[in-house]
View 1 (cartoon, rainbow, N blue to C red):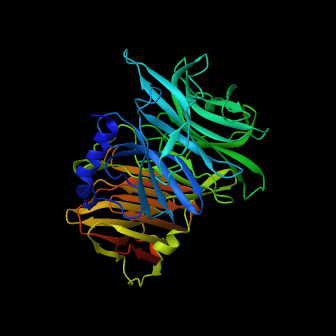
View 2 (cartoon, rainbow, N blue to C red):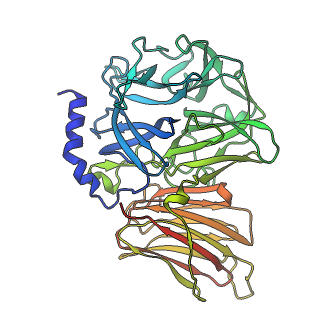
Length: 496
């Protein structure tokens, strides 16, 4: 039986079980069954948001499809079915990641990597193009002339994937690809084309900071984004990528494979004035983010709320695993990226101010079958007295019948997330980010059944993680001496 037919049968068999899972998100994109990973082909087209993604309906069998979903508001997603299937000679072992390119005269093209496993255990990688099928199905039609690029240039291995195609500053079109050198170090490559059909290798992206030249063993999912720096007014390039193999550095880069960015200016293959590598997300699960194409003045990013090799989550017993992050708007200020929840969240989850008791303990969210809410708090540390500890905290505690499942500790000098009481703790129970000491700290949280995303420092500090709890779940604030909850606003997700 072919893969496409078996995948369709698996979807029919498990759809009801997946929909009934209390850990299923209400306002995040998740697969109908099976495994989701990288977002692909994100594009805003005809007033709607389209998200394709890596989809393995036969998981744990290694057969990667592209799935297609659409949204009017970036929060409520409607599944449109499978868009690409791994059935051609050049993608038979997976339709791997890629992106969307809106065309100047209308329409859109999609680019992806075809993955092939060889009998000796090796791999081949082919860069391919697809276009909408044109029949209203949401499916994509691969180019009959695929592959556009039949393999890596000399000096690089078959770890050669994840094309981003965009207009080149010099004219024509450029394609950025993640790659691995033959010496086992990571790189980003540039190809150029006048017609998007015939591509020529331009060279390797070169950095003027030595530590950026080989941070890992493979640089995946490159994304080049043009932004105006709010502080300086300068036009800059932000290069986001995933340097696989980059090890921990104190609090940073603690996930299996991190996601990072640098800011500078790309001229030809030279990335000049590059800033030091910064981690994009401080949480436990975040990878392979992509920016929506075709958004005009907005820059909207969405990532995979997961990690490679960490599929043994509680939802797998219900026939599905992983989800996307909340989409975020990107702003550049003073050479640093800020990630803010998209303003569409104000319509679905409008905040209302809570009445706080004159006490050190306050319930902010009443018990819910699973956490599904938005919460914003402001904490003051100006009342620290001689009786206060050295680093007083306001703790947001997610309480389920087993006790404290998750704690978000907000301090004058940083934030710590501890999910030691949850049903999922891959990578350890705790993440911390030290921040410049401040007398006040505003923090916003988005909980959606089995995920929790935390935004602080106006979006300069973000934590994304899965939190599998046992309902009912309530949220309580508990303040040490020297910390005071100034205000709290909340919104509960409305029913379907």
